[in-house]
Structure formats: structure tokens, C-alpha cells
Length: 117
Length: 114
Picture 1 (cartoon, rainbow over the protein chains, first blue to last red):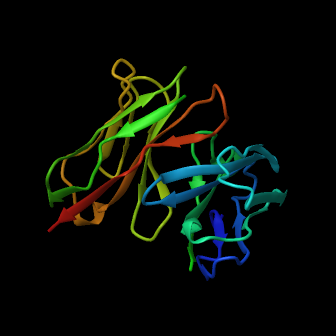
Picture 2: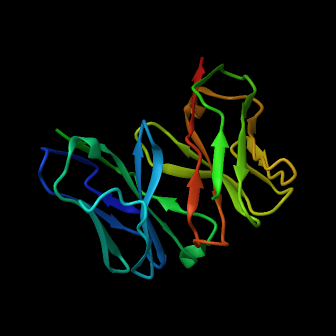
């Protein structure tokens, strides 16, 4: 398996623009997590899904942030409108039993570095 | 709620020095404990884990023992290399509440000089 895939790897946009981050989890994993990493706040869990259903979105900072998982192999995190304080690295991770995995290990993607000017 | 506290960095060591990064946790029940490593420009990778008290996780010369009596999971390595320079995150996963939800410490940056 190619692991967790995220796109784009880097995104530079201007304040007010819509930004969409994408994630493809490991095939067969039934949990998907979105994290944000900044120098000030460290790693923060934004939202996570189980079997494509959002379970806990209490970490989503504002209504400007939304996440969807239309099927088991794809999720998006959207920011509309974006602001400079949204600049961060956004990670996606998946977890599940498929492929010899366990519910003990999350697998992380390489992240998307977002810069909002 | 559950939480993880790890020593603040940065930590700077010379090659072949001994490394300890302290990590303590607060949790109800019996969490699993993890160390993740993040190399520059990359995502997090699992370094080692322990799922019950007194378990020792080990990988690439790193070790950590799950100590329930002291609620600790300190990371150690006997002889660090320049290639170990990275940010290390201690984390716990507690199944009492949210299945699979990791709670991270703030990370400790390690720099190893030749």
C-alpha cells in the first residue's frame, strides 16, 4: 500500500480564498483523522471519522472549516474563507485492521503545508 | 481529561551521547502509549509503542517502558546519531472514550551534533 496520501503538499493562497485539502487513507482503514500543526499550538486534532461518519468535530476551530468523507477512500478539509492564522501544516491519518494494521497505530500522511498571505 | 506532558526542548546532544526524553501522562483506564518521530519536512512516524503496564517498546535503538506506577513512558537511547535529529512526540490512546483518538504531547526537538 502507498500509505496515506495527501494533496497538495504545499499550498499558498491569499486571504479570503477557499482552500481544499485532500486525503486518501490506507485502503480498508475505517478511521480517518485530520490534524493541524503549528509552532504555537503543536498538534491539534480537528475532526475524525469512523466508517465515513464524523464522530468528533469539536476541534474544528470555526465555521470556516468543514470536512467531508464521501466514501471510504477520500476525505476533504475545506477552509472558506481562509485567513493568515490558518497557516499551518495539516496532517491526515488513518487507522484500522486492514493490511495487518491494528487499532493501536495511526498512519500519517506527509502533510499539506498551507500558507495564507 | 486525558493529557500528555513531555519535557520541553530543544535538546542538543553530541553524537554517541545518551538520550532521555521524559514523558508523563494522565488518563483514566489503561491507555496505550506511543512515541512518534517527525523528521524535518515529513509526517509523523510511529517509533515504538506499549499497550500495557511494564511493556517495553523498542525500535532503532530507542526504548521506552510503560510505568503505570509513575504514569511515565520515558524515551531513551544509549548512543544517538546525527540522523536521530528530529521532533519526538509522546502520545496516548485511550479506548474508554474515543476509539483510536491519539492525544499528543507538545513535542521535543532533538538536535545531534557531530
